[in-house]
Amino acid sequence: MSDFITKRSEDINQWYTDLVLKGELADYSDVRGCMVIKPYGYALWENMRDVLDKMIKDTGHVNAYFPLFVPKSLFEAEEKNAEGFAKECAVVTHYRLKNDPDNKGKLIVDPEAKLEEELVVRPTSEAVIWNTYRNWIQSYRDLPLLINQWANVVRWEMRTKLFLRTAEFLWQEGHTAHATKNEAIAETEKMLDVYADFVENWLAIPLYKGKKTESERFAGADETLCIEALLQDGKALQAGTSHFLGQNFAKAFDVKFQTESGSEEYVWATSWGVSTRLIGALIMTHSDDHGLMIPPKVAPFHVVFVPFLQSKNPEQNAILLNKCEEIQAKLKEKGIRSKIDRDDTKRPGFKFAEHELKGIPVRVVIGPRDLENQVVEIARRDTLTKEIVSQDQMEIYIEKLLEDIQSNMFERAKTYRDENTTRVSDWDTFKKQIEKGGFVIANWDGSAETEEKIKEETKATIRCIPFDIPQVEGKCIYSNKDCNHTVLFARAH
RNA sequence: AGGGAUGUAGCGCAGCCCGGUAGCGCAUCUGGUUUGGGACCAGAGGGUCGCAGGUUCGAAUCCUGUCAUCCCUACCA
Image (cartoon, rainbow, N blue to C red):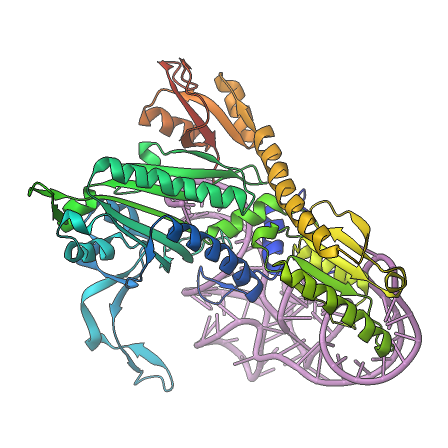
């Protein structure tokens, strides 16, 4: 059947693409490198966004919106940041089209309408925001300034992959200004914890938290903290980052404030972001050969009802649908989102497969036999098991079941992650382990040269210097020098 | 950006070598029989063959260019 998806064991990249397309999360567009997020995928994003937005606000931040376009002169003000993004920027050079005199009905760029200064389509908003902050910050009383924005950004990628790497993507970016270095560092750490909380407890994706090495650091940052996930293809994925920007942007944009004692100082900055890439992480962490598996806490629908409708039996259909609506109303009181599959042209087996493909956590099946017996059949997506449950108190059963599914999905992902995290101490084992996939814990001498050599020879990078794995004395996996940096290696997306 | 492959109906493909009326399967629509794990029968609709040039009496087919997608490298959230 054409609707079947490729098995993970056959081709995991095709499996992933099948899940996104056939699960109706997104579609390819006719625009290079850009995708269309379909209603079902966008509903998932909205749920994720709403939860995270609340967490960001609960930690004292407010939302604002800054322009899509960045004048080139502003963009280049912070040199390291500009250099880091330069080769993936889309640039607007003209502001007008006109009719093509040689080709009726076609348009050409009007050469008369060249912009005096080119506009960079934001790959990130530090430049525009810091240029604005200069005007907003005069005194220590204006600090801290804690602002977040939900926006789209563009990074001109050569090779794209649905959700995981697209030219345009949606994200949130927080940009904060502080009076002291310590306060900015605390903010950087706090937001990393917010991300970790969100990703582990809502998306059910286990993480390693840590800090980036200098070579993996965000351009323009003094320190980059990150959360790293392990996907089912054995590759690591940076799921979110939080940057301590020092005074780099304050100096580049001349953002100073007057202290209580009257002196003038540059402010300290942070920025932090997560994107629609998290949807890719979610898909690649939880799904199986039957399709998507969406954690209940962010699923567009918690429950789908499949009544056994028969096109020639409208009376019975009405009774079945009534029963579904009755249960649906009770579920709604508990905050459980559900939908009823009212299609009477498809057979039940087809529908089961369809809803499994879309990853709906719980399926409630009800037919004439169940009506007689006052029961329903409840199937859970994570284990694919079914149970017959009495119709009274169903909403309590389902509420509990959703919690079980959420925690089971996290535990299962954590087991996979832990089983694929290996500590090694010799180079041969290191290479073999990297080849197999997963995280490899090893000691590193701290030098960029060693890091680079390891990358050249194994394609593995240092994902982070992890916070939750003890730093131990030992010899560097590559150079054999004594050292005490214990780091996390993996091949990454 | 480099190497390889592919663009023909909504999807998956055949036809191309050897130029001569556009095909198949799935999906869709209509009617009927079905319905507790991806139903069956009959009929119907749907395509400027990625796009632009060229060769030719004639191009899906040959030639040139171009764009896009997929895989492998490089880069990246």
